[in-house]
Length: 406
Image 1 (cartoon, one colour):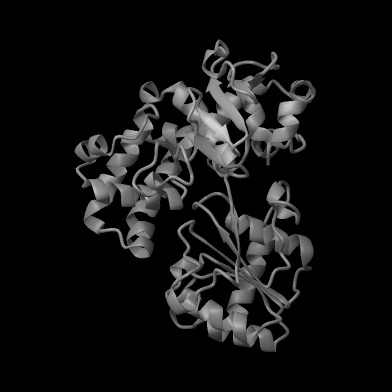
Image 2 (cartoon, helix red, strand yellow):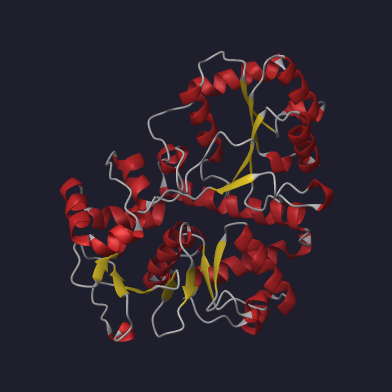
Protein backbone atom coordinates (compact mmCIF):
# COMPACT_ATOMS: atom_id res chain seq x y z
CA UNK A 1 0.00 0.00 0.00
CA UNK A 2 2.98 2.33 0.52
CA UNK A 3 3.43 2.48 -3.26
CA UNK A 4 -0.14 3.72 -3.64
CA UNK A 5 0.31 6.31 -0.90
CA UNK A 6 3.46 7.66 -2.54
CA UNK A 7 1.74 7.92 -5.91
CA UNK A 8 -1.39 9.52 -4.43
CA UNK A 9 0.75 12.04 -2.51
CA UNK A 10 2.52 13.16 -5.69
CA UNK A 11 -0.82 13.60 -7.46
CA UNK A 12 -2.31 15.59 -4.58
CA UNK A 13 0.67 17.93 -4.50
CA UNK A 14 0.22 18.64 -8.21
CA UNK A 15 -3.54 19.23 -7.95
CA UNK A 16 -4.46 22.86 -8.59
CA UNK A 17 -7.06 24.59 -6.41
CA UNK A 18 -7.38 27.65 -8.66
CA UNK A 19 -10.84 26.65 -9.84
CA UNK A 20 -13.41 24.53 -8.04
CA UNK A 21 -16.68 23.31 -9.51
CA UNK A 22 -19.97 24.59 -8.13
CA UNK A 23 -21.02 21.02 -7.33
CA UNK A 24 -18.11 20.62 -4.88
CA UNK A 25 -20.04 21.95 -1.87
CA UNK A 26 -22.93 20.26 -0.10
CA UNK A 27 -26.40 21.52 -0.82
CA UNK A 28 -29.22 21.12 -3.30
CA UNK A 29 -27.92 19.43 -6.45
CA UNK A 30 -24.43 19.55 -4.98
CA UNK A 31 -22.34 16.75 -3.52
CA UNK A 32 -22.67 15.54 0.06
CA UNK A 33 -19.26 13.96 0.65
CA UNK A 34 -20.29 12.55 4.04
CA UNK A 35 -22.51 9.79 2.63
CA UNK A 36 -21.25 6.24 3.34
CA UNK A 37 -21.16 5.27 -0.35
CA UNK A 38 -21.23 7.71 -3.23
CA UNK A 39 -20.69 7.40 -6.98
CA UNK A 40 -19.56 10.17 -9.30
CA UNK A 41 -20.60 9.25 -12.82
CA UNK A 42 -19.89 11.17 -15.97
CA UNK A 43 -18.42 11.28 -19.42
CA UNK A 44 -14.66 10.86 -19.66
CA UNK A 45 -12.95 14.25 -19.38
CA UNK A 46 -15.58 16.24 -17.46
CA UNK A 47 -13.40 16.43 -14.34
CA UNK A 48 -14.45 13.64 -11.96
CA UNK A 49 -10.88 12.83 -10.88
CA UNK A 50 -10.02 16.49 -10.29
CA UNK A 51 -13.19 16.90 -8.24
CA UNK A 52 -12.19 14.09 -5.89
CA UNK A 53 -8.58 15.25 -5.58
CA UNK A 54 -9.60 18.83 -4.86
CA UNK A 55 -11.99 17.69 -2.15
CA UNK A 56 -9.20 15.70 -0.49
CA UNK A 57 -6.73 18.57 -0.75
CA UNK A 58 -9.23 21.03 0.69
CA UNK A 59 -10.31 18.84 3.61
CA UNK A 60 -7.28 16.71 4.55
CA UNK A 61 -3.73 17.70 5.36
CA UNK A 62 -0.88 16.30 3.31
CA UNK A 63 0.29 13.03 4.87
CA UNK A 64 -3.06 12.28 6.56
CA UNK A 65 -3.34 8.49 6.31
CA UNK A 66 -7.04 8.42 7.11
CA UNK A 67 -7.74 9.24 3.44
CA UNK A 68 -6.57 7.56 0.24
CA UNK A 69 -7.14 8.14 -3.48
CA UNK A 70 -6.25 5.60 -6.15
CA UNK A 71 -7.29 4.80 -9.69
CA UNK A 72 -8.48 1.28 -10.38
CA UNK A 73 -6.56 1.14 -13.66
CA UNK A 74 -3.22 1.46 -11.81
CA UNK A 75 -0.88 -1.54 -12.17
CA UNK A 76 -1.23 -2.25 -8.43
CA UNK A 77 -4.61 -3.83 -9.12
CA UNK A 78 -3.15 -6.36 -11.54
CA UNK A 79 -1.94 -8.31 -8.49
CA UNK A 80 -4.12 -6.96 -5.66
CA UNK A 81 -7.85 -6.67 -5.05
CA UNK A 82 -9.79 -3.69 -3.76
CA UNK A 83 -10.85 -5.87 -0.82
CA UNK A 84 -7.21 -6.45 0.13
CA UNK A 85 -6.43 -2.75 -0.13
CA UNK A 86 -9.40 -1.69 1.99
CA UNK A 87 -8.61 -4.25 4.68
CA UNK A 88 -5.05 -2.91 5.09
CA UNK A 89 -6.23 0.70 4.80
CA UNK A 90 -8.90 0.23 7.49
CA UNK A 91 -6.57 -1.57 9.90
CA UNK A 92 -4.13 1.35 9.63
CA UNK A 93 -6.71 3.99 10.52
CA UNK A 94 -8.29 4.60 7.10
CA UNK A 95 -11.65 6.40 7.12
CA UNK A 96 -12.31 7.78 3.63
CA UNK A 97 -11.29 6.04 0.38
CA UNK A 98 -11.67 7.37 -3.17
CA UNK A 99 -11.65 4.79 -5.97
CA UNK A 100 -11.38 6.37 -9.42
CA UNK A 101 -12.13 4.62 -12.76
CA UNK A 102 -13.98 1.89 -10.88
CA UNK A 103 -15.60 0.55 -14.06
CA UNK A 104 -12.17 -0.63 -15.26
CA UNK A 105 -11.94 -3.10 -12.37
CA UNK A 106 -13.57 -6.46 -12.99
CA UNK A 107 -16.31 -7.48 -10.52
CA UNK A 108 -16.10 -4.08 -8.84
CA UNK A 109 -19.74 -4.02 -7.75
CA UNK A 110 -19.59 -7.23 -5.70
CA UNK A 111 -16.41 -6.10 -3.92
CA UNK A 112 -17.80 -2.64 -3.18
CA UNK A 113 -20.96 -4.23 -1.76
CA UNK A 114 -18.87 -6.48 0.50
CA UNK A 115 -16.77 -3.51 1.64
CA UNK A 116 -19.90 -1.46 2.32
CA UNK A 117 -21.37 -4.27 4.45
CA UNK A 118 -18.11 -5.22 6.20
CA UNK A 119 -16.74 -1.75 7.03
CA UNK A 120 -19.85 0.29 7.92
CA UNK A 121 -17.84 3.24 9.29
CA UNK A 122 -15.72 3.62 6.14
CA UNK A 123 -16.75 6.33 3.66
CA UNK A 124 -16.39 5.24 0.06
CA UNK A 125 -16.38 7.40 -3.07
CA UNK A 126 -16.25 5.70 -6.45
CA UNK A 127 -16.13 7.31 -9.86
CA UNK A 128 -16.58 5.99 -13.36
CA UNK A 129 -18.34 6.05 -16.65
CA UNK A 130 -21.87 7.39 -17.06
CA UNK A 131 -22.69 3.78 -17.95
CA UNK A 132 -21.71 2.62 -14.46
CA UNK A 133 -24.31 0.07 -13.41
CA UNK A 134 -25.26 0.32 -9.75
CA UNK A 135 -27.78 -2.50 -9.98
CA UNK A 136 -26.55 -5.88 -11.16
CA UNK A 137 -28.16 -8.96 -9.71
CA UNK A 138 -26.96 -9.78 -6.21
CA UNK A 139 -24.56 -6.82 -6.24
CA UNK A 140 -27.39 -4.28 -6.22
CA UNK A 141 -25.89 -1.02 -4.98
CA UNK A 142 -28.76 1.23 -6.06
CA UNK A 143 -30.29 1.28 -2.56
CA UNK A 144 -26.92 1.81 -0.86
CA UNK A 145 -25.18 4.27 -3.17
CA UNK A 146 -25.91 7.98 -3.66
CA UNK A 147 -25.32 8.75 -7.32
CA UNK A 148 -24.13 12.10 -8.72
CA UNK A 149 -23.97 12.77 -12.45
CA UNK A 150 -21.11 15.16 -13.24
CA UNK A 151 -21.74 17.54 -16.11
CA UNK A 152 -19.19 19.43 -18.19
CA UNK A 153 -18.57 23.12 -17.58
CA UNK A 154 -21.49 25.52 -17.69
CA UNK A 155 -21.02 28.87 -19.42
CA UNK A 156 -20.68 30.44 -15.95
CA UNK A 157 -17.94 27.95 -15.00
CA UNK A 158 -16.25 28.49 -18.37
CA UNK A 159 -16.04 32.23 -17.65
CA UNK A 160 -14.50 31.50 -14.25
CA UNK A 161 -12.12 28.75 -15.38
CA UNK A 162 -10.92 30.22 -18.68
CA UNK A 163 -11.49 33.98 -18.31
CA UNK A 164 -11.16 34.56 -14.55
CA UNK A 165 -14.64 36.13 -14.50
CA UNK A 166 -16.72 35.15 -11.48
CA UNK A 167 -20.52 35.23 -11.59
CA UNK A 168 -23.03 33.84 -9.08
CA UNK A 169 -25.28 30.91 -9.91
CA UNK A 170 -28.72 31.96 -11.13
CA UNK A 171 -31.63 29.53 -10.93
CA UNK A 172 -34.09 29.25 -13.79
CA UNK A 173 -36.68 31.13 -11.74
CA UNK A 174 -34.11 33.90 -11.13
CA UNK A 175 -33.41 34.11 -14.84
CA UNK A 176 -37.08 34.36 -15.77
CA UNK A 177 -37.94 36.92 -13.08
CA UNK A 178 -34.76 39.02 -12.90
CA UNK A 179 -33.26 38.71 -16.37
CA UNK A 180 -32.47 42.42 -16.76
CA UNK A 181 -30.56 42.66 -13.47
CA UNK A 182 -28.61 39.48 -14.25
CA UNK A 183 -27.73 40.72 -17.74
CA UNK A 184 -26.53 44.04 -16.33
CA UNK A 185 -24.28 42.18 -13.92
CA UNK A 186 -22.87 39.98 -16.69
CA UNK A 187 -22.28 42.86 -19.10
CA UNK A 188 -20.59 44.91 -16.38
CA UNK A 189 -17.97 42.16 -16.07
CA UNK A 190 -17.50 41.06 -19.68
CA UNK A 191 -18.71 41.09 -23.25
CA UNK A 192 -20.76 37.87 -23.11
CA UNK A 193 -21.57 37.33 -26.81
CA UNK A 194 -18.06 36.59 -28.18
CA UNK A 195 -17.25 34.54 -25.10
CA UNK A 196 -20.48 32.57 -25.48
CA UNK A 197 -19.56 31.74 -29.09
CA UNK A 198 -16.18 30.54 -27.86
CA UNK A 199 -17.84 28.43 -25.17
CA UNK A 200 -20.11 26.73 -27.71
CA UNK A 201 -17.01 25.56 -29.60
CA UNK A 202 -14.39 24.98 -26.91
CA UNK A 203 -15.76 25.56 -23.43
CA UNK A 204 -17.57 22.44 -22.21
CA UNK A 205 -14.57 20.30 -21.25
CA UNK A 206 -11.98 21.63 -18.76
CA UNK A 207 -8.93 20.54 -20.75
CA UNK A 208 -8.90 23.18 -23.51
CA UNK A 209 -6.62 25.37 -21.37
CA UNK A 210 -4.10 22.54 -21.17
CA UNK A 211 -4.20 21.70 -24.88
CA UNK A 212 -4.31 25.36 -26.05
CA UNK A 213 -5.07 24.33 -29.61
CA UNK A 214 -8.55 24.02 -31.15
CA UNK A 215 -7.50 21.09 -33.33
CA UNK A 216 -5.99 19.20 -30.38
CA UNK A 217 -9.09 19.95 -28.31
CA UNK A 218 -11.46 18.64 -30.95
CA UNK A 219 -9.24 15.58 -31.45
CA UNK A 220 -9.45 14.93 -27.70
CA UNK A 221 -13.25 15.03 -27.87
CA UNK A 222 -13.22 12.57 -30.75
CA UNK A 223 -10.93 10.31 -28.73
CA UNK A 224 -13.43 10.41 -25.87
CA UNK A 225 -16.21 9.40 -28.25
CA UNK A 226 -14.09 6.58 -29.69
CA UNK A 227 -13.25 5.36 -26.18
CA UNK A 228 -16.93 5.27 -25.19
CA UNK A 229 -17.98 3.48 -28.38
CA UNK A 230 -15.01 1.12 -28.80
CA UNK A 231 -14.43 0.26 -25.15
CA UNK A 232 -17.29 1.13 -22.80
CA UNK A 233 -20.28 0.16 -24.94
CA UNK A 234 -18.96 -3.35 -25.73
CA UNK A 235 -17.56 -3.97 -22.23
CA UNK A 236 -20.35 -2.50 -20.12
CA UNK A 237 -23.42 -2.76 -22.39
CA UNK A 238 -22.55 -5.83 -24.45
CA UNK A 239 -22.59 -3.98 -27.78
CA UNK A 240 -21.30 -6.07 -30.68
CA UNK A 241 -17.75 -4.97 -31.60
CA UNK A 242 -18.63 -5.34 -35.28
CA UNK A 243 -21.15 -2.50 -34.95
CA UNK A 244 -18.93 0.13 -33.35
CA UNK A 245 -18.02 1.72 -36.69
CA UNK A 246 -21.70 2.00 -37.54
CA UNK A 247 -22.38 3.70 -34.20
CA UNK A 248 -19.65 6.23 -35.02
CA UNK A 249 -21.32 6.78 -38.39
CA UNK A 250 -24.58 7.41 -36.54
CA UNK A 251 -22.88 10.01 -34.33
CA UNK A 252 -21.49 11.77 -37.40
CA UNK A 253 -24.94 11.80 -38.98
CA UNK A 254 -26.33 13.46 -35.86
CA UNK A 255 -23.49 16.01 -35.85
CA UNK A 256 -24.25 17.15 -39.39
CA UNK A 257 -28.05 17.25 -39.38
CA UNK A 258 -30.65 19.46 -37.79
CA UNK A 259 -32.73 17.98 -34.95
CA UNK A 260 -35.90 16.54 -36.39
CA UNK A 261 -38.73 14.26 -35.42
CA UNK A 262 -36.91 10.96 -35.33
CA UNK A 263 -37.21 8.66 -38.35
CA UNK A 264 -35.68 5.36 -37.25
CA UNK A 265 -36.13 3.88 -40.71
CA UNK A 266 -34.03 6.70 -42.17
CA UNK A 267 -31.35 6.13 -39.54
CA UNK A 268 -31.38 2.44 -40.39
CA UNK A 269 -30.68 3.13 -44.04
CA UNK A 270 -27.98 5.73 -43.30
CA UNK A 271 -26.13 3.74 -40.64
CA UNK A 272 -26.67 0.18 -41.86
CA UNK A 273 -28.15 -0.91 -38.52
CA UNK A 274 -31.44 -2.68 -37.90
CA UNK A 275 -34.33 -0.64 -36.47
CA UNK A 276 -34.45 -2.37 -33.06
CA UNK A 277 -30.67 -2.28 -32.82
CA UNK A 278 -30.64 1.47 -33.43
CA UNK A 279 -33.20 2.09 -30.67
CA UNK A 280 -31.08 0.09 -28.23
CA UNK A 281 -27.87 1.83 -29.25
CA UNK A 282 -29.48 5.27 -28.95
CA UNK A 283 -30.44 4.37 -25.39
CA UNK A 284 -26.85 3.31 -24.64
CA UNK A 285 -25.47 6.54 -26.12
CA UNK A 286 -27.94 8.54 -24.04
CA UNK A 287 -26.88 6.72 -20.87
CA UNK A 288 -23.23 7.31 -21.82
CA UNK A 289 -23.89 11.08 -22.01
CA UNK A 290 -23.01 11.20 -25.69
CA UNK A 291 -26.49 12.26 -26.81
CA UNK A 292 -29.70 13.60 -25.27
CA UNK A 293 -32.99 11.92 -26.18
CA UNK A 294 -36.14 14.01 -25.91
CA UNK A 295 -39.70 12.73 -25.67
CA UNK A 296 -42.96 14.59 -26.07
CA UNK A 297 -44.49 12.82 -23.08
CA UNK A 298 -42.48 11.13 -20.33
CA UNK A 299 -45.43 8.92 -19.44
CA UNK A 300 -46.27 7.82 -22.97
CA UNK A 301 -45.62 4.16 -23.75
CA UNK A 302 -44.14 5.28 -27.08
CA UNK A 303 -41.11 6.42 -25.09
CA UNK A 304 -40.18 2.77 -24.93
CA UNK A 305 -40.19 2.62 -28.74
CA UNK A 306 -38.37 5.71 -29.95
CA UNK A 307 -37.50 9.27 -28.88
CA UNK A 308 -39.09 12.28 -30.53
CA UNK A 309 -35.87 14.31 -30.94
CA UNK A 310 -32.16 13.58 -30.67
CA UNK A 311 -29.39 16.01 -29.76
CA UNK A 312 -25.68 15.48 -29.24
CA UNK A 313 -24.86 15.88 -25.56
CA UNK A 314 -23.11 19.23 -25.97
CA UNK A 315 -22.27 21.71 -28.72
CA UNK A 316 -18.51 21.04 -28.58
CA UNK A 317 -19.11 17.52 -29.93
CA UNK A 318 -20.76 19.01 -33.02
CA UNK A 319 -17.70 21.04 -33.90
CA UNK A 320 -15.41 18.08 -33.19
CA UNK A 321 -17.28 15.62 -35.42
CA UNK A 322 -18.65 17.72 -38.27
CA UNK A 323 -16.97 20.13 -40.71
CA UNK A 324 -17.78 23.72 -39.70
CA UNK A 325 -19.77 24.23 -42.90
CA UNK A 326 -22.08 21.37 -41.90
CA UNK A 327 -22.75 22.64 -38.38
CA UNK A 328 -26.19 24.27 -38.13
CA UNK A 329 -26.26 27.22 -35.73
CA UNK A 330 -29.89 26.48 -34.88
CA UNK A 331 -28.85 22.97 -33.84
CA UNK A 332 -26.00 24.36 -31.73
CA UNK A 333 -28.35 26.72 -29.90
CA UNK A 334 -30.90 24.01 -29.15
CA UNK A 335 -28.18 21.55 -28.12
CA UNK A 336 -26.83 24.10 -25.63
CA UNK A 337 -30.30 24.76 -24.19
CA UNK A 338 -31.08 21.06 -23.74
CA UNK A 339 -27.65 20.38 -22.23
CA UNK A 340 -27.84 23.15 -19.63
CA UNK A 341 -31.51 22.74 -18.74
CA UNK A 342 -31.52 18.95 -18.43
CA UNK A 343 -28.97 19.03 -15.59
CA UNK A 344 -31.62 20.26 -13.14
CA UNK A 345 -34.92 20.28 -15.03
CA UNK A 346 -37.21 17.97 -16.95
CA UNK A 347 -36.94 18.86 -20.64
CA UNK A 348 -39.47 17.52 -23.13
CA UNK A 349 -40.06 18.00 -26.81
CA UNK A 350 -42.92 20.50 -26.75
CA UNK A 351 -46.34 19.31 -27.86
CA UNK A 352 -47.07 22.86 -29.07
CA UNK A 353 -45.35 24.60 -31.97
CA UNK A 354 -42.46 25.68 -29.71
CA UNK A 355 -39.20 23.84 -29.07
CA UNK A 356 -39.28 22.67 -25.45
CA UNK A 357 -41.52 22.12 -22.47
CA UNK A 358 -39.73 22.59 -19.12
CA UNK A 359 -40.95 20.96 -15.89
CA UNK A 360 -44.51 20.76 -17.30
CA UNK A 361 -44.69 24.49 -16.61
CA UNK A 362 -42.70 26.63 -19.06
CA UNK A 363 -42.51 26.67 -22.85
CA UNK A 364 -39.28 27.80 -24.48
CA UNK A 365 -38.50 28.70 -28.07
CA UNK A 366 -34.82 28.90 -29.04
CA UNK A 367 -33.44 31.01 -31.89
CA UNK A 368 -31.41 33.96 -33.13
CA UNK A 369 -31.86 37.65 -32.36
CA UNK A 370 -34.66 38.01 -34.92
CA UNK A 371 -36.70 35.14 -33.49
CA UNK A 372 -40.31 36.20 -33.04
CA UNK A 373 -43.13 35.06 -30.78
CA UNK A 374 -45.40 33.52 -33.43
CA UNK A 375 -44.72 29.95 -32.34
CA UNK A 376 -45.53 30.63 -28.69
CA UNK A 377 -48.35 33.16 -29.14
CA UNK A 378 -51.11 32.55 -26.61
CA UNK A 379 -49.10 29.95 -24.63
CA UNK A 380 -48.84 30.90 -20.93
CA UNK A 381 -45.42 31.01 -19.24
CA UNK A 382 -43.66 31.01 -22.61
CA UNK A 383 -40.35 32.65 -23.50
CA UNK A 384 -37.97 33.09 -26.41
CA UNK A 385 -34.29 32.54 -25.63
CA UNK A 386 -32.37 34.30 -28.37
CA UNK A 387 -28.72 34.23 -29.36
CA UNK A 388 -26.77 37.40 -30.25
CA UNK A 389 -28.59 39.70 -27.83
CA UNK A 390 -27.02 41.13 -24.66
CA UNK A 391 -30.17 42.24 -22.83
CA UNK A 392 -33.76 41.01 -22.61
CA UNK A 393 -36.68 42.54 -24.45
CA UNK A 394 -39.93 41.55 -22.77
CA UNK A 395 -40.19 37.76 -22.87
CA UNK A 396 -37.22 37.51 -25.25
CA UNK A 397 -34.18 36.68 -23.12
CA UNK A 398 -30.49 36.19 -24.01
CA UNK A 399 -29.69 32.55 -24.65
CA UNK A 400 -26.43 32.72 -22.68
CA UNK A 401 -28.45 33.14 -19.47
CA UNK A 402 -29.23 29.41 -19.52
CA UNK A 403 -25.51 28.84 -18.94
CA UNK A 404 -25.55 30.46 -15.50
CA UNK A 405 -27.59 27.80 -13.68
CA UNK A 406 -24.65 25.86 -12.18
